Image (cartoon, rainbow, N blue to C red):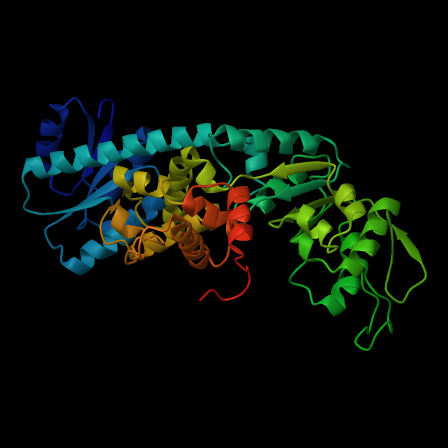
Length: 459
């Protein structure tokens, strides 16, 4: 608690002087005020880290003052004191941002403990801020243009950002971003756009799987009035709207094969023709595509054009799943706890060490997005001031009854284990392989060996 500055604001001089005497004995810099005006003057001049604030003040209610302080001096932690504190007042004070509430009459030790606790919280906040700043992988200017949810210190994530920033410098190179759902493919795409010479132009995100097949061509290339029944006026498509900017094609692997040929032509010739029209429009667009699917497999199945694949894949960036980079979980967790607490205007809780261990051992099928949702749920339901393992129920926390096998037929046991893993993972081979701690190629060989049919119910 060295070098902490504390302001005590109470209309009773006896209380302010007594607390000042005892707190200064603990090597703290202490200021006192007996009116709101004096308090605001010292807040502006000295910028104390902690304010001990009485609720009943002359001319201004302490709770109203608290609300103003949290707006004008958000880095100052406030400990409320009052001789009239019922539970409703305590709750209101905490909702408005107080870090503690102490009822009068109190012992000096009560204040000392509250100050010490708040001082530790401030020190932890500083550590978290320093850690988050170290974990931030992009410049402050770029950070301001994107969601700051792509942080980490693992080598895998540093490599992803390094490639993305290099790709950004070339304003024309097309990029394919791959990775599981929730890994941050759109955030990486925004980093490429806003880190590029096209940063002042449009970033147009398009979810290829969310547009009805009958409207895809019209949405991408536009249409002229009368091109079809509901075409009541000329309309620009995504290519024209994103001209000189970036077109982000999310879920590109879900695009119908018929549209892929027209997309390829537009990318190669840098021209588009509206549906029902004859005039061609020049377009200058960088294409960033994203998918969570295996495009090589789709090419083998004739569901994706290989020429389009090579056109959109000048540079490929693969974002590894969160389970493969557990070192990033502490930084992400502290970031989400702080940012979501701020958005919800609630005190930032501390994080129990056992919670970190629990999350780092979890396989996170929903990746970073799942972690963010977990944190938001925990903050909404939190009753204390610390996040613990109990606040984060995970899939698989409740262990199923052990599977009983007859005899010791190893092949039968292996067969049943693979079926059980696939069933629990909704036939997702990658997740089932992870659960069994074998490679995806290994589980594919075993599926073939035992003749297990993926996509059909297993009895």
